[in-house]
Image (cartoon, rainbow, N blue to C red):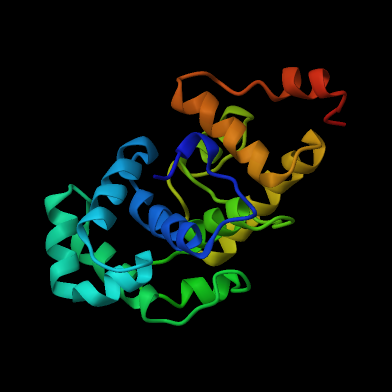
Length: 202
């Protein structure tokens, strides 16, 4: 089962790579800790050797029903995303954000979150509610939800990556650090973090 607290892994098996991308599809707009066990239960219900094979063998209709039964929100759209992905023949070790976003229902945040946490040296940002709250807490005028405009997304992405650079951390670690703080109701104190790590914001 996917562990949201330890989601970063650059040496995933094919099975886990497929499961991880399905997790990011499921978690869009939902809580990671809730969706991880639900996705696990969905995959346990399906027959096949890998997540994508399970989905292809189930077919869109059965997949939709099982997602609904296991409390996967927006199950019609999520089922279509998963089914299209499983039949896309994408290479999950080399695909780009544009490749992923060509799949129905996969947006900029989902594509980037997958790459950040499954592939090393990925310099992009998953603009979820926690990252956006972090930026607002620093005084930036950013929306509360992920922007749909590609131009706006990329502007905020570059803003966030500036803080990543100053932190001395890789994107995945910085992203998870912020998520852990805000999901536990604790504001992320970047000044304190940078002092501890020997980095400055200037």
